[in-house]
Structures are given as structure tokens and as C-alpha cells.
Length: 111
Length: 118
Image (cartoon, rainbow over all chains, first blue to last red; front, side, top):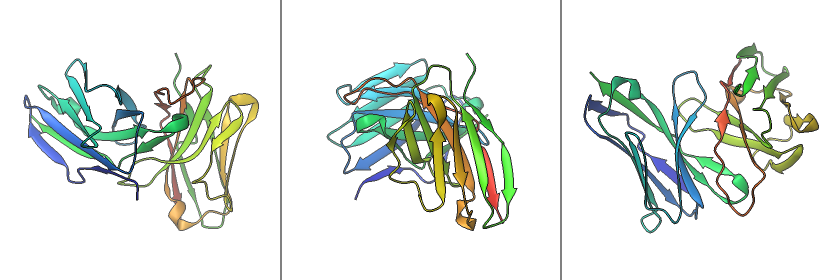
């Protein structure tokens, strides 16, 4: 069956360290993969998109990798700050603009 | 530019009652999505419109849920009658749309409507 897995346990890291979040999927062939940030009581906010033919994408302190052989994406936040504390959602883009979301990983950055 | 607007922000109803949610997408966005997000889970697509036509409603419980998008702009989502398990946040999102062949779509989400069914 089709499945998207993100770390269900919260990730706790110290300010200044690099946070790495994982998104694994099975039985999908996504055309692209997106990462969104969601704060409590708010809708998700788009962060980065990476296509199936791309290996890595960067935006400021954010980096995303996409390995279609391993069926995995890694999302990195370097020099993390307490303001980065939020839930991060992985979303697979399939045909017809349909997007399938993972359950998300909660990140806590401690000062 | 103005973001996606949703109303109401909160709604409390009793089971078997009906409820309606409204969404105003970003101006010019062709694609509109309704998601259901249960606490601790990711958003689950209920229905997707391209302009005023339905693209995907495979996960919409059609015996109780209905949605329309008039004139390809605003949209309403209705639940009638509501069940306890419908308690969730209902998110509306829009994207520019118009491309084909698996082109990427960045979705812009509204703040959501938090529904509690008692």
C-alpha cells in the first residue's frame, strides 16, 4: 500500500545545531516533493520544492535532498533557532497536481 | 497580495447538525483544495477544483459532505449531518494552476476552520 512516513517522535535540538528531518515513502512515484511548515493554529506554509530529477535544493538556511532510489527526502535546517520550532510536513506531488501529505514531524529548538 | 481567507475560524455543533465553511482563494488562482486535518495527522485532501470543475473528490464522503465552487472563485464545503469523527480542522488552499503534465504547484493555505462536533 502507499505510505508516507515522517518521524512521529518530536525532534529536540539545541540552538545553533543542524536539524535533519526525514521523509520516506513507498509505492509512490512522485513528480516532485515539497516541504511545508505548520505552526499551531495556522495553515501550512510552503518552504521548498524539489523535482524528481533534482538531487538537492537550498534556500537560505534550508536544504532538501531527494533520493528517488531510496525513496527518501531529507530536510535540513542549519544554525537552527528557537523560531524554527514548528511542525514540518513532507508532501508528495503526484499526477494532476494532487498532493499527498505526511503526518509531519514536530521540531523543538532549545535556546 | 491578500492570502486565502476562510470563515468561520471556529465552529461548535452537535452531531447530526449541518455546518458550512467558506473559502476565498488568492485572486487569479485556478486550483482550489479542501483538506481535513485531524489532530496529529497531516492534511487529507477532500476535494480539488480546477476553476469550477472537480478534479478529484475520491476521498470526499459524499453521503454527508458536499462542496461547490461558484464562478471559479469562492468555495463552500458543507457537512450534513455531522458526525463526531468530523471534528477536525478544515483547510482551504489555492494554487495558480493551469499547467499540465505533472508540473509543480505551490499551495497557499488559509488559517483553517476548527470544527468540534459534540
